[in-house]
Figure 1 (tube, rainbow, N blue to C red):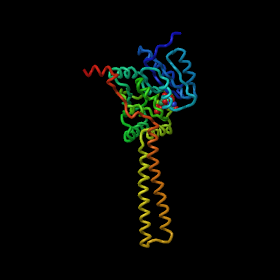
Figure 2 (spheres, protein in one colour):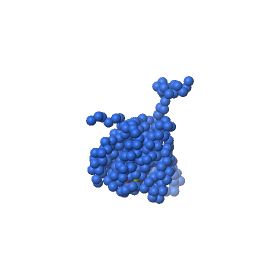
Figure 3 (cartoon, helix red, strand yellow):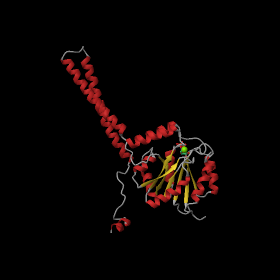
Figure 4 (cartoon, rainbow, N blue to C red):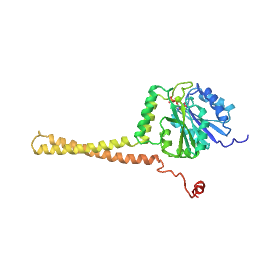
Length: 322
Ligand code: UDP
Ligand code: MG
């Protein structure tokens, strides 16, 4: 059998118990990808599904040679499943999208065209119309983006989920990040690659039910906040420092009260001991917080800069400068 050509495009799709929607998904996606007239691969990441998803995927493979199935041993979660797909994808361009047809596959050609025309590395799919989402989901999503901006996760377009196109350089950079619990919609913008956006109307889930219960939404938010901000830790430092000053003041007050004779026996020594030790503990907690924060950011190994061009190696730049 001749070896398949190197894929220009990889499409990564996380799937968890998506048997109900899978036939519809294949039916919608395949004509779009076949219509590209470029070699592609579809990387379906079966995130430990317990329904007929793996059976249906294997069946689809018989008639769709570009379909690659990656089965995770156990359910790892949406973000981890996408990460697994990104690590496996071989394409020069990689699109990630959900299996439930909420992200219309028909946008993919537009994403590729925009990336090529504008010479950017990332094209974010932005939900311009979320009327198909519940009011609760919309409101919590709004809160999420506002909070993350406040916390310093800049560069992430509002209402950009995980439907996006990335260049090989971007995917390599994402794969090189060692941190656990990566929230890709925030990590990718943080890498700082040139980007643009494409708007689309978010559709209703075509079939099946949401695999994102409230508990998972809360976990994603926690991962986002802790992954992008040391603000909560900073708060602890300031509390520690504030508590320290308060305890020192209490110490002073107890001494003054003792010297002016406004106390009952035993009160001064008790207050002094409590105040002195609280002050010490809170101060140490604050110091620890500062170190923990630094350890955390250095473990994340996010690049502190990103070189866009080097005139020594960049031919394009050399020509344009003349
Ligand atoms: N998903 C996954 N692992 C999980 C949960 C979800 O791979 O543990 C997939 C799911 O099959 C879908 C995508 O992630 O393709 C988004 O999930 P869903 O549509 O249920 O989330 P919602 O759109 O309701 O936020
Ligand atoms: Mg969905």
